Length: 223
Image 1 (cartoon, rainbow, N blue to C red):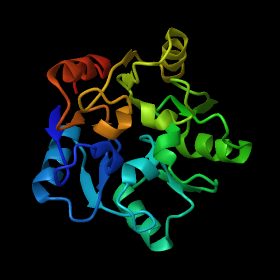
Image 2 (tube, one colour):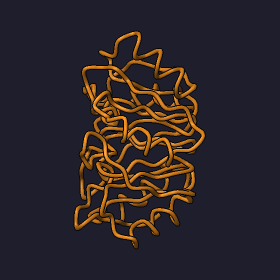
Image 3 (cartoon, rainbow, N blue to C red):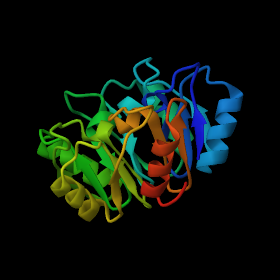
């Protein structure tokens, strides 16, 4: 596990998307940051990309080790570049009104938890692309489930406002332990300050020692 900021911004999860094999970062990311991402997350490729000309890759993309979901706002050129970086995984464009898929979907290789209003056709695409069961639910009283959970094949961290019933439901869905915690000195939007896969984790620079200890416990010690 390591701390990271991008151009002084601790909200790294808004800008970085990572799976077990690759990571996508915004254009202009410093080489030393790319090297740290590759080392800590153990990924083979760290590639620059955009979606609809924006840098918010963590907000706009969702996936797991089997597949990657892109919003309908992605251009064909961007899709091809992302496909090249992603390698041999399923890639699909999710034709929904919403485009912030990273805020609306949380997934590991066993299940995807999605926002309650997702349509049935989009739900089918999520299942087929990621190769998992897809479950509609809210967390912490919000449909922005992807922003409130970070989950890997080793464990998960969810916002501290999650109820015992929600934590239990998430553990059953993902098949891994799920703990409550925060990032970046008390922020409940977990994804904003945490980028993780089954090999490692990066936290925003403002994340405290106790928060890091909790994250390590949640993600199986370490990441």
